Every structure is written in structure tokens, then in C-alpha cells.
Image (cartoon, rainbow, N blue to C red):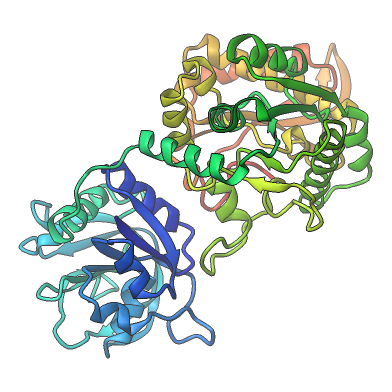
Length: 508
């Protein structure tokens, strides 16, 4: 096992995920975890994550110096390198020239950490401070134009630090660097896979639930479906699935989803039509955080009502993923809140059901891999992500029944066209957004003043970073033509060229 200590980086879980991709268990711990606990867990090595703070800022997360006395190999990343340098007597100062985004570094390739890599490497930087004076016993093994110490090493103690982020896809040689640390420096063995994760989670859920009853929220998407099948394996007929039509689903989902669960997966499903209730809760609301909280609260109210109808129900299971968690709340470290996901920070504090989130540690691609292990249809596993609040956060501004219906038609056309073009599986996520503005147009020689929509399509590996999809212009032209001709009330179509960061994938 490789222990990842969370100092607040948005990419902490991504480090653990990269390690798991190598077949080694990566586990995340608070930055102040006891070194004895890591020893008891048989950690082979420790990675110190990045973080947004300055090591000298009041309240900045600190490193327990005992961790460095216990003999673990240690790799510090960004803030992790800086806090290690400070703890060991080095000096960290403001660089005076922050580096954010792509950069070039020169590496000392004779060092084990960079073995067999080219000397000049493209990397992803995100820092304002730098190591100005090395701790005793360390040497600089890399530099950039603004960081004389872009990497450092005390090879005798197996302590290393890199100022850049090897865990992100924007550092092409990052996986090689992490492999050198995990296998060559820590001596870890590749003996973990998603099947083991499934067995472990099933055991844990079965033990936790005992004879209790469980309801799980299902939407027809990948996350909730994998959750339902995993829960069924753990608790059998103690599980009931609840499918809620919140009036914010894709077109046709209300009719298709419950039938698919019952006929193809043998799940017990209760379908609840709550369209009017959700729309009523969203009346007059334009703030996206309030939307998410009201949607989350209304979902929980419905689940609790259904639980009372079934008698005593103890648990609610839902398909929360780690990107939802890391953007909504700080799970283990001082990471920043980006937005509140309705099923994480949007849950009410007075919720009566105990929450089970078996996928909380996983990214989307890992969930799909888990679904394959559980025998779920490839067609369903390949579906694009769809947010829990549904079209409520894609109708920008006030949500009304009519605005939702417009967006449903636009969304259907967009997805139909990219499927026909054979590029659906090349795109991580594609959807439409209805803007709170109107635009002047001309139709049939007459002036129109109607809605404007934005098409959004991105490529990604894990939803932590994303780039806009280069959909051929002839396909976009066909989509636009169909929308303005077939969807009454829309006369303008735009395409979103934003990456994440700086934008998020969803608009709200």
C-alpha cells in the first residue's frame, strides 16, 4: 500500500487513482495521520500531496516530523515538497513569478526517480512559492526557468520532492515518475485490482447493514446503476431501488429506466412521479447553489417518505463519486469547495437515513471498470455522465416546465447527431445548456426574439481536468440546423470552447 497524505490539493484522489492503475493499493489519509498508523497499515511509501496554502501562512497544514523518522520512502508533490523542505530545515520563499499551467523542466536523469526519461520534460505547474534553500543532505535534481529547485532528492534516505504535478495527464512522463517511486524506490508489488475492491466493499456493506433495509436512488446513469448492482450483491432482497422523476430528466427517461432495471437486471424498483414537486421547489430560484440544495433536500424528503411506506428502512445508498466529493467538501484535508453537489454538500443535516456511498473513492472510469466486473451491459456503462440535479443546473436562471421541455428537445437532438456521426464514445460528456438570455433572429422573413442554447462537449479521463471536444464543424452545423428548425422557441446555437480549468464541465 502507498499512503497519500492530503494537504488540500484538488488532485489528491488523482494521485491515489494513478497508483491503483499500477495495480497497487493507494489510500488517502489526513495530513496529520499518525506515522504508527501507516506502519500498522504496512505502507510501502508515502506521497505528500499538493495544496493551495503557503507553508508559512497561518493555519497552513503541517507535516508531522515523526513521519520522516520512521523510515518510509517519501515523495513530496508541490506543497508536499515545500512542507518537507521546511520541516527538514530548508527555506521556502515566494517565487516572485508564479508558474501555473504547462512548463519545461530539466531533470537529472541519473537519479532513480527520473531513470530512462528524457532530460527536458513538459510538466504541469501550479505554485507561487519555491524551495529557496535545500535541507541538509538534499541535492537539486531538476530546475525550470523560475524554479532552481524543480525537484530535489536525498537518495540515501529515499526522500524526493517535485515542484510539478506528475499525477495529471498534462505531465506526459508523470506516470513513469510515479512508477519509479512506487516500484523502484518503495518496492511495492502490483497485487490489487478493482475486483478486490468490489469484494471488500460488498463485505463491508453486508457487515454494516446486517438485517437492515436499504433504499438506493437510481437514475439510469452509470453511477447509480453500479451502486444498485453492488448493493444487491451485498444485501440481496433487503434492497429497494427508488427512481424519482424530478421533471429534470432527459426526454423519455421516465418510461425507459424503470423497465430496464426490472427486466434486464432483476432489481426491485419503485417509481415516483415528483415532477410538480421539484418544479415548485425551484420556483423563482436562480442561484445554482440554492438550486442544488433544494433539489437535494427534495430528493431526501421523497426517499424518507418512501422509506416510511415500506416500514423501517435504515440506509440510503447513492452513487456519489470522488469528483463530486472533492468539489463539494473537504473529505480529509483542507481542499477548497468548488461547488456543492446536490448529493454531497446539498444533503440536509437532519436526514434520518444513514448514508452509504460505496463509490465515494472512485473516478468515473473506475466505476465503469467495476461495472464490467459486476456484469453490467457495456451499452449502459458507456453512457455519458448526467448530473444528479439533472437539467435543473443546465437551465441557467429560473427553472420552469416550459424551459425544461425546450432543453430536453435540444439535448435529444445533440446526442442523436453525435451518435449518428459515430463519435459518442470519443466524447466524455456532451450536453446542452439553456441560457437566461434571448437573441434576435429572422425566420420566414420575420423578426424573432427567442432562446439561445449552448452545446458543451468535453474529453477527459477523470473529470478533474477536461478539454473541449473538437467536433467536426459539419456535425455542429447539422446539430444547429436541426435545433433551430425543430425546437420551437430557439433561434441561436453556440458551442463552448472552455477547458477545465478554468471552467468546470457543467455550467452550474
